[in-house]
Image 1 (cartoon, rainbow, N blue to C red):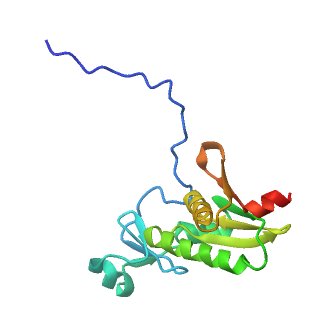
Image 2 (image 1 turned 120 degrees about the vertical axis):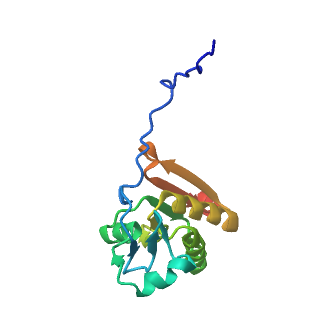
Image 3 (image 1 turned 135 degrees about the vertical axis):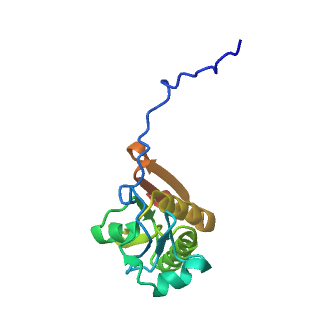
Length: 177
């Protein structure tokens, strides 16, 4: 007599919305797509800045390449951030250095995933607000600031982890308040 597998009850687990980003296509389009704004290529269900050599020539010279905006360019155009980084207590002397640090980290993240971008940087009552296209990039920028400049980082996730607000505060700014 062969016994069947034991079935486990998973009803106790929290039901989390597993729906991915609404800007990602649900179905893979046929052929190749090229974003006219950033130059990234959609191939084999992935966006990439450096397509593999076997399709690189096709992506640049073929008529079979369709043109379509990547999800990051659509988010930037529609001003729909998935992450926000707040810089609290940044002095005017170190602002340029911090922004260069953020840009360098964005470029490193973009090498792996071209959909991770900084959308907008603006001043907000003496603090700075940085909007990103993905939650992971905002989290990564906060970690990099903490690693390079010290201070404290706090992460505040929204319902179902669709949006993150990262707060970075310098130690000296915290003591002044």
